[in-house]
Structures are given as C-alpha cells and as structure tokens.
Amino acid sequence: MTHPRIYIRNPSNPIMASTIELTFLGTGSAAPSTTRNHTSIALRMDASVWLFDAGEGTQHQLMKSNVKMGKIERIFLTHLHGDHAFGLPGLMCTLTNSIGNGAGDAVENRVMHIYGPCGTRSYIRNALRSSFSHLGFQFKVHELHLPTDAGTDDSSPHDDELLGENLMLKEGHWRVHVDDKFTVVACPLVHTVATVGYVIEEAATPGKLLVERIQPSLQRNKEALAAQGTKNPMALLSRIKGGEVITLPDGEVLDPSLLTGPTRTGRKVVILGDTSCSDAIVPFAMQADVVVHEATNACLADDTKTEEEVDTSTRDHGHSTPQMAGRFANQVAAHMLILTHFSQRYKGDASEESLAVMKEIAALAVRTYGCENVLTAADLMSVEISRQPS
Image (cartoon, rainbow, N blue to C red):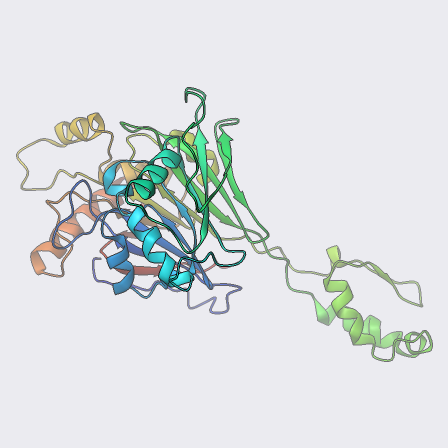
C-alpha cells in the first residue's frame, strides 16, 4: 500500500490511553527523487513528537504533513550518512521560529535532546558554527558510544548547547531514555558505518478496577464506614485504584492486586537504521507492535539478476531486501512490518505501475514474514498504532 495518510486502527479497541502515530516524512535512500524524500520518520505520542533521522528536505516534509514542527522534543539519528542527517542543522535553525519567538532568545526550560552515534556532537557543532547559526532554544547531544570509539569530542560547545551524555554500550545495548510513559533502548546494527536501531516501548498500564466485586463489600460496611467518617463508601475506590490496601470495619481486606483486571501491555515500536544484520536488537524487539525496516533493493520479476545475486549485492552495501526484513519481523513475532528506505528505482507515487511494484515488494516480505500485515511506506503516509486486544 503506497497511498499517503493510511490510518490503521483497531476497531475492537477504540479507547486508547494515548495516541501513537508514525508519519513517514521521507522513504527514499541515497539520493532523493521526485516521489521520495530522504529518510525521516516522526513518532507522535499525544502532543509530543520524536523524530527519527532527518535527511535533507525534512523540514519541507514537516510543513506538508500533519506533524507540528514545534512539538518536536527529541531527535534520534540512526547513523550519520547524509541521507539520514543532512537535514538536521537546517531543521534546528527553523525550529527557532517554531518553538521560540524568533528573536534568538532561549525558550525557558526548553531543551532539545538529540541522540546519535559517536560523531553526532561534532557534526552538529561544526554545521551550526560554520554557518554562524544561533538558535532560540538550547540543545543537548547524547552520543551512543561503542567500546571501539576513541576518546571524547574535544571541540568547544556551541553557544546554545548544554553538555549531553556519552552513553556506553552495556550488555549489548544502550539505555537511551526513560520517563514515566516510554523507554527507549538502542542496539548496534551491521552497516558500513556505526548504525543503531531503536526500540520505543510504552509503559504498561494498570488493569481496570473490578468495581462489581468491590461494591457489595463497601455497601455492606456503609454504616460502619460512615461512623468512621467516610460518608460515601464509593469514595474508597480511588484509594484502592491508587494501590492502597484497605481493611473494612468487618475485617475484610480489599487488596488492589486481587481486585484489578490484567495489566495492559504498552505498545512497542522498532525503528531500524540501515542494516544488513539486526540480530543484536532481537531480544528487545520481541512482540513488537510495529517494525519499521529498510528494504533498499529487491529482486523483482523483470530483474536480470537472480535473487541470490541481489541478496549478496545488497548485503555487501550494508542494506536489506524485503525478504530479509520479513525474516526479522518473523523472528521477533512482530504484529506489523512497514518497509521503507527504497532505492530510486522504486517510485513512491500512486500510478498503477508504481503501486504494482510496491505490491510485488510487499509480497516478497510476506513470503518470509509469514504474515500479510506488511505495508510499503510512502512519503507523508501515517499509521496509527493501537493497543493489541487484551
């Protein structure tokens, strides 16, 4: 499917604690084309936006999309190849007018957090300093370091920069970000340069309070509770839902752990950078709701090369075929696979010819995935990720 703004919703579970939506701002590889921009993906979570990669032209794509540029809080780079990073300095400058007042004054308490492999910090510093750029906000760059990365960046910070962290690889992964709603873990991928993949996991939410089991006990103790100062026994429900164990006047103990439904597992999104092997991230990607995987090259019916030849050539250049993406999605038991980062050969328009090519590419992934739930991304396509049914 390559039509823009495809919305995938789960009608059996319409009420969500929060909205999580992917918008593909760019789906091309190497050089942009008239139908595909350089790589960038926006992940919207309610009012917040996290950006993954920022190829050249990303800010133009943001203006065309339904993603609000001023809501971007964090930017994650998978690697520093130009088709994934050349748009970042310009985007940062434009954000001055989106989140600030445009006069160069820093927005109070607003800090943009940027994550990427070793070298990200010096790249941003040099680009901003060489172009005499000053921002209307402060930023921090957090680098994901491998054991083989040499030393620290000795260049001086930019005027608008606050010092970020150097995150060290521990037990095969980086713990990139944790808050009360989401956790982000990254792992190294096999490519021609240092590259990472990210796993964004939503925190689990408590199960529904089983009011029908609690209410008879509260009503039975109504008079005794009133004598103790609790005129409305149902007011105790909020305390129970908050985790408090309550002993009623007749001695019955209301234990929240026994009076709530099953915990609702949070959603999990896996966004991989360019890769010819993603084995390191498999343990963290299991049961992902969505896997976003590159599929740079494919062996189509009219190709002169064999499937084996295309596979070998693609791997040699540090990339993946649709079949490789499908195998990964199968390995982690993902619920949905979205293919992106296509060669210029595969147009992203809505012509019959282009749609037929993308359908053929999706079918190659389905063959190894063992599941029909495969999408081929097009620029400005959005996919809303619902919770899986309990």
